[in-house]
Length: 289
Image 1 (tube, rainbow, N blue to C red):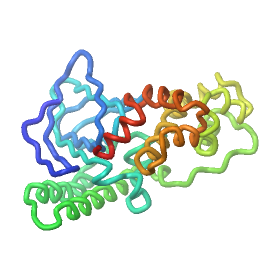
Image 2: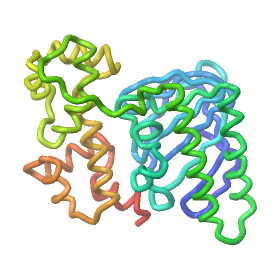
Image 3: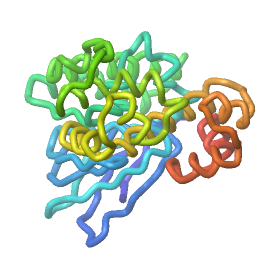
């Protein structure tokens, strides 16, 4: 990524970016939340295990240390990158007020992408411009003003995403009393995963809960979500681990035990494999230590 200018204040930055086409896209992990507003070009964005098409007026939302890579189709992707630290504004801490966790960020079952039509761009552009102006202008209580504008922007973007996909706002359905075929099984998986991710970490254990073979359940999940059940399980465990590491002062071994790991060393290896950094490193980086 190249940028020509950066406007920054403490835990909040906005910068133009230009990403050129390469033979092998560079996978990045950053210790901040990122909102990539693509203004020119087209291509793909790979976030975690999924690849998404992007074009002008597409927003891509990335959480701290989430692996991502962009690949322009031909010409460079250009736009504005807005980043903020969890210390500046924690999506999880404000999830009840803003509602963007699970819709824009931490999208375990949905794409972390918002494609804007003309009306959507018109709705978000004024607040985005106010963020840029406030950051450049400065003055009394600037952090408070930026936080309020960021919160408004995220609420507006969340509403647009939910308008595009109303099912994302629905409550998770209750677990079925008996196994159901293919898509309904996969559709009910989120509720099962929420119940059991601390104690069940293999595809076979969820297959047993549904009375299916691991192969049959794996095919249904792959068709429904475009990735494997093992990837979903890992992402859910890591999501909870990151919440605990940032929002609490619990020792890493207590976080490990709380997530069902008998051995804290095993948890540390599991976390590093998925997040690219140790639990201690993640906590220090996201808290600005």
